[in-house]
Length: 363
Image (cartoon, rainbow, N blue to C red):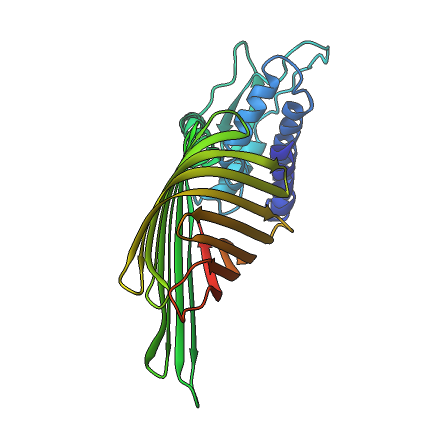
């Protein structure tokens, strides 16, 4: 049908360019196109039709060779000469089940003729080349689609935020972070890092670093065991440096489309360096809740709460964040962190807070 419509448009556009006694030959060529189109339900009819549609380069050849100037420069002579020949007429029996498309297309003095013969229609070399390229390309395209649909085991994000103030008080604040996840069939690995640096009137007022590693082994769909390493350093805090190692049990309490809630319980050890040049080593118990709410396709809310309790100190941390996607994988993240230590060095504060505004790139 596609070929027939294109042929008809070309015949119609070029009808005015052909001598009057040559138009009948163009009409005959168009009628043969219609003969091949009306019966694609017969044996091999649809296959030949698809081949012709894959080789639309033949369409222009059937018409342009009949131009008065033609592609070959002698189109007028070809049309006039062709009219001197008798038009072959054959009666076609339109009975269901017969194939009327197995005709051989030949060019005689610039006019295409269709003759019914015994055997299938011969395809020219362009048809064979086109079908060969399609046959080679289809498996490659299918394989590429399958590879893109497969989920990569790697994922993560990178965040960066910067704020500068000038005037009566000159200051700057820089925060950055990174998270990398690697997921296998039963294992999940996660590495995290973060840094905060603040100056005021060229004096550093805040400098803190965090790094962590977690490996989890899925036991069932909702239950898993995990091991975790956490390192924290705060240059201006009561606890200058702290390193903890825990193992424990976790469970996915809620895991639906818009809401996820995970809970973890563990035990381990912790080593701390205090600002008064003393150190503490003790065993700890940990509890953690992590919640995520997918508000919409472009916005999400997250909340995590950690309790790390030992003989010398109980450390708690609350992190609240709101994420809004700006463009593609780029998002704006607002975060608020509260950290509290039950026992601190004299004259130090028990609670520290941190507010950040940053851009996040997810991959």
